[in-house]
Length: 64
Image 1 (cartoon, rainbow, N blue to C red):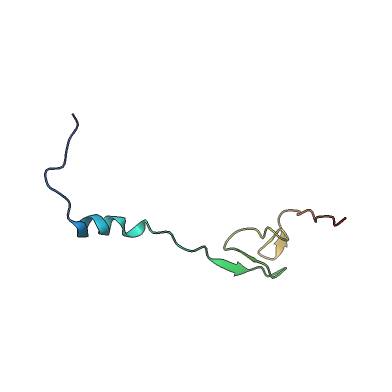
Image 2 (cartoon, helix red, strand yellow; image 1 turned 135 degrees about the horizontal axis):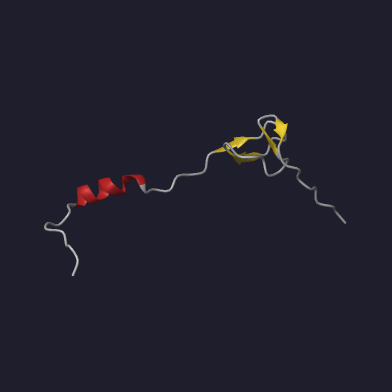
């Protein structure tokens, strides 16, 4: 049998430990090139630009 706690943790101590576990909403910013909303510090999935230059080539969908 492994080690067990000697005393019960109070609700306050338990909840203070879990204070940083909450889920935060994603921070979205507007792309400077196309105007689409994108994640902060990430390449725009719509146009492939990051910090004013094209980083990846995004293929445009063909409409039939």
